[in-house]
Image 1 (tube, rainbow over the protein chains, first blue to last red):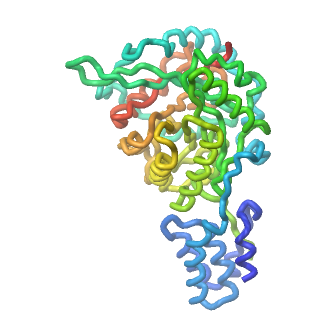
Image 2: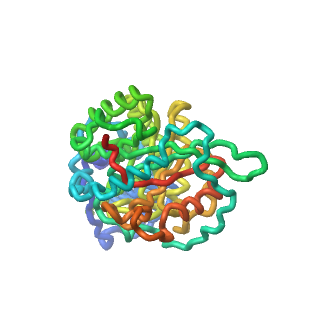
Image 3: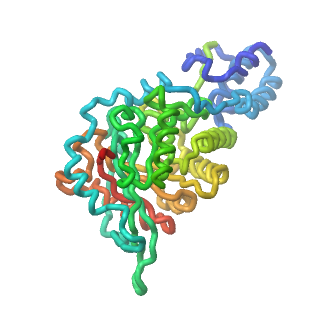
Length: 271
Length: 153
């Protein structure tokens, strides 16, 4: 059972990818590979362990163990939240966010965006409608590519973006639809904290700030993106925002931080 | 979040951070469920369904006052066939709002967002995306416009 002990350590300690030479596998191991892999909610790393065990035991014992392992593995890897772990070099290299060139600062948009902001000021009285949404905006029947992935590059798009969020109010009698008044939300990319420390944010302009990013790691814990000081900066941001009566969300993921959202790291064994 | 155990672990870890930092909400910026974003991402065909399960778990784990949002493309999340899902009401039930990422349809930069004021109107601008989301998203009316604007004094 030395093999089991080997796999009981956190998956993050294991290599990222190891190749399997399928031709060296006995036939029932290949079958079992498919069987475990196809299990509902199956985890690829379970299947890999199954193959490893299959080399040295009978088919029936193997089937039993692979089934057992497929249920045990999530607890074996025992993920731990790691909010106090400062900045991950791995994440930094994933997203390129830390290396976003200075030209990514939307300097050119400042003037126009600032004037646009006036129309969206959050200090409007509640119930003062800014936008009316008909219930059937079928006029907007556009067809678009279903994926925008081809249009992306590695430059961070989030810097300084502002989102206007709706408060919901009832429309006047006799109308169908919903009047919206805005909340204003901005992402706060921690890798630009030196440019804009939390204390310098003009909280008159925002209702919510999304702190970017916490990044899921291969055991579904959270790492920080972009800055070794991210936890400290987030604490300062929450403090100063609450002092102004404003709110802070933590944004989990991001373009470079969505690697492990779907799945644990894949581990394949060299046999 | 490809199985129940992973989802619970993920939610537990997020809730820890939520409490540790006295946060007011969580934004899930998964780029993207059931669609390839960064080439290194792992993607599963059931991502969107799993995402919904995850969000309900997260909702249950956070205080009632917590706001939960998700970032979306200019089309709804992809379903198991890879196409934008037809009915996003299940997400509207669990989310407080969505963030339409129409700022990076063409990649991040200073002047290429579809809603950039000096660009001619295009079909990728914000309003069409809102039109796609809105009739599907009641009762949680989602989304609004976004513009690049540094939060400088």
